Every structure is written in structure tokens, then in C-alpha cells.
Image 1 (cartoon, rainbow, N blue to C red):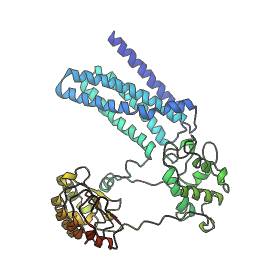
Image 2 (cartoon, one colour):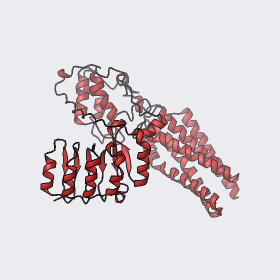
Image 3 (cartoon, rainbow, N blue to C red):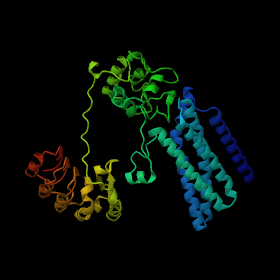
Length: 451
């Protein structure tokens, strides 16, 4: 009887997956919004999806533990969790299709994520079927299924955060090893034009996570001038010469609680300056090249940040850096993709392990460090002598909640490139900071809760 019930449930699950594959293949998202109820239900996908992820991982751990110990109880628990995970993957995949179909989504990322979800549901069901076969084979299938889950989750992450969200902060050595690039959207116009300098950066900042080549909600892409002027599924979104009759401008100026407000999905709205730039640009004809001097009230460009000072390339010393990270329990993180802008010393995960001796042991790579986050560590005035001697390129230094006193401040005052110093809740007094206040390089000095 139990075997018959199990077969029946597996059959129902298989039919559900076949139906899902049919919907993904024959009723794919078309970039148009559909029924309000479907959109409401589809949004539960973001809640439901976390359960099968956790359950599949738990099923794998139980299967590995059962294999290692031979305990039947672990094997039975793992089987039960896998069944629950399979039910969760099927449910999440259906709600995901509903969200994509009804919410106006389109693009290769959406398709990849949907097919990944359907494949994950099918793979989970096959894992359940294989439980009555060879256990080791079943475990291999489960491992492959977890790998598929990771890939599918990555596609979902790119949908939410942008196609480069995983690699844009990847450490440079890893980026070089894997030969990956963060990549940029092509704007398709002269990079010195008004559109490229003033308009496209606004779209890149606030719009491309939903309106790019990978994901174009409402069939609208804003990744190039041509696509902006082409519009979306409901027609053009820009009416040259009249911002207030342009659908794009109307959407970004709606009340934030309006369901048609853009950016949607809780993303940060455009600033007043960004809205003003778009309004003036559209009213001036929405051309690629516009005479900025003729636009009365055009917000000024924010002053460009000073170029990062160039220091020695740390990459030849990467093995030494990695060894120091391991032995000292600290992190040395690239400040940017350019290896000549230096490293950041991070201790937040283990502040107690960072002492004056730690700073001394960093001497071989100290000249690469431009930012030292030493808050709540055990460094003292002795360590400040080390900083002044070895960390000659230090620009940002956080010593908040440390034992540093006025004597230590007198030492770090010798750092010629220091731009920001945090002495919150330290034992420094006004006399010791007088020299700091007159340093030409120092722009920020934090003295909260100090003497």
C-alpha cells in the first residue's frame, strides 16, 4: 500500500513537472504584464524558493552522514527531507513561471532562470526515484542536483542584482585566474557626447538591473541610445521636446507608492538632480548631443574624484600576501581593480588577533596598504610607531575603540599621505591632535567620545 502511494505521488509530481516544462516552452514570458492576481501570487516565488534550497542542502548532508556512519535513521531522515525538497522545487518553479509570465519580464536571464528551475525540479524528482536504486548512485545524482541548484540560484541573483553582481567585487587575482571581466553595457554613442556623459550614467545607475540586454522588463531596454528611443512593448517612452508627455519621465516622477513608479521592486529612486537632467534633456529634443550651456538649471556634474595615487603593483607579492593572511588571521583586500591603488587591511572578523606584533609582521607588504581598519583591535602606541615607519602609503586609518593614546598620535602624525583618521573613543587629548589638524593631507578627523 505504501509503495502504491509512493508511486502515485511520484507520478503526480512527474505530471506537474511535464506541465511546467510545457508552460515554460509554449507559454514563455512575453514582456507583457498580465493578471493582477497572477502577479500577486507570483511574487511568493521569492519567499518559497529559500525552502527547497535549504532542504536540498540538508538532504545532501544527511545522505553523506548516512553513507559515512551507516545509520539507517540518518538515511531515512535524508529521504524524507529530499521528498520535501522536491515538493518545494516544483512549487517554487511554478510560482517562478507565474511571476515571470505575469510580471512583464523577458530576456535571456529570465529564460535561463526558468529553465534552470524546471530542470532542478526534474532532477530532484529523479533523485527521489533513485532512492530505491543504488545508494551511491543516488548520492551522485543528489550532488549533481545541488550543483544545478547553485547555477540556477546564480541566474536568479543576476536577475535581482544585475548580471555582474557576483564578479564585480571578485578579487583581482581570482579575476585574472578565471579570466573574467565585470563588463559594461555598450551605450552605442560618442563617449564624449551629452548623452554618454550626463544621461546614460543615470540609466546605468538606476535602470539597467531591469532594462538591459539580459533582462528587459516590459520589452524596454535602456542600455543604449537606440534602445531608449525605440521604447518598449507599449511604444515609445520618450517624446522628444516634451518631458511631461514622455512615459519614462512620468514613471520616475510618480509617487513612490504607485504601482507604476520606476524604478520598481523597491530599488532606490532617482535623485532630484537625475530627474532634472532627464527632464531638460528630453525637453531639448532628447538628442545624443545637446549644448549643455543652453540648458537653464542643469545640475552641475559632481566633482570628479581625484585619481587614485599609484603605488607599486602588489601582484608579484601575492603569495607572500596570502601566507600572511593565513598566519595572522587578517584580510588584505584589493582596493580596486587597478593593482596600483593598493590594499585594504581588514581585521573586523578577528579584531582580537590583531596586535602590535601583527603590524610588525606585515612589514614585507606594508607599502602596499593604503587603508587599515584597526577598530577594536589590540594595537597600542607601540604599533603606531610601526605604522609610521613601514606603512608609508597609508591614507585611511581607523583606530576607534583601541588603546591608542596621545603618544601614538604623535607617531602617526608623520604619515604624509594620511587623509582620514578615526580616533573615536581613544585616549587622545586636544594637544596631541593640534599637529594633525594642521596636516595638509588630512581631510577627515573623527574624535567622538575621546578626550
